Length: 486
Image (cartoon, rainbow, N blue to C red; front, top):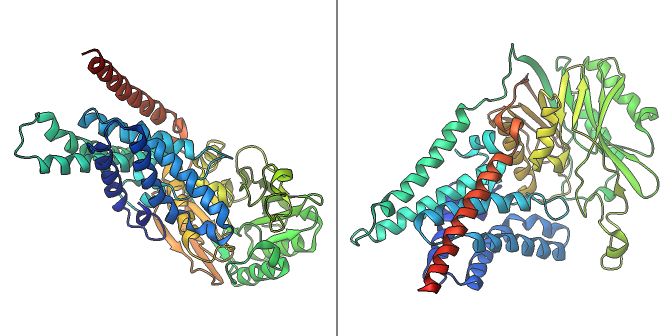
């Protein structure tokens, strides 16, 4: 499972991993023993998250251990929820449990932590089209369903000579056929095209470059801003929209009256393009704002979106008065003021859905931005504080899933990478090199239609998963009651 995730990206190993989990849970030594099911599920989670969340060790070992234990607990819950009363129950309950637990992990605690999640490893694989139907939790469920099907096929092959029900022989293949059908349905489902012609937009993602693995408090904001300006000056007039990364223009007060804002306005006029810039503003001694601010081709500031979903223990400290007695918080001296509403900025280049950095991992933020009218998805981000490629590659994978879910072409810009241009089918059309000063230029389409996921969200998939799991448990409890009575 861990090797299916970015940066490794061997997507086929996720179904293989789930097959191993299914076989372990079905083993007679595990059976109905709750404690053993917890141990099997927990061991599975330890394998996935100890590697999938390794990037946390760059910041805090205690935080790493806490997050791995939390992931282990979610995986243990999956082991508890799976029922093994029959082949069909094993298949249905594993897929349903994975859907529900992944949805829970994406929201709890502190807004959730989707990094290291199963779906990220499937962004480059054949299961990704399922995101159009039910989002990332559905993709995770398809991986689990495929794994459960493989497990039943393997179990059947081991017992070919034994007398058994025909249903045993067909359960695994049926599960695999259902996975293939869901993928085909995702490819054929509405792709967000919308009525009328698709208006092309020439875009540029600007990456200023520089060293990686540095905390923001140790970085000179003027140097970062200067790199962005220098890289942008290499562009020729022609792009309709130029996207800068998150947090590359840091000012001590409202940005509109600063010299840096005047420089950005001059660039917009010189390029005759809309500039979307990641801005950090001081908001008193203990707080700051993180926004994507839009300059029109005439140099006027015309729109902004303030980040809503903040990074806990990165952009704010929950219960700071408690944690300041337990840990050194000097690297997080201030708390970000959260924004409100959907991430939509109406620009001269068209209405743009916007998710800032960490928000790209949360499909609800992208969905809200597109439902509000976004026709292209913008992802200004900053992963410069990570030394390895683990988080940048997972971020690109998340952007690819958001493109599938929303049916929107996606543009991502990061100060040291990865910057990327991704089409509405999740294909990476261009990607930068980590650390290098670079500009990516390409053409995307303004699309106004809605995918099934944008229309209905994950609710239908979650309801079906809950009903299926409840049915599996009802059958299991009835059988247990029957055995007790006999």
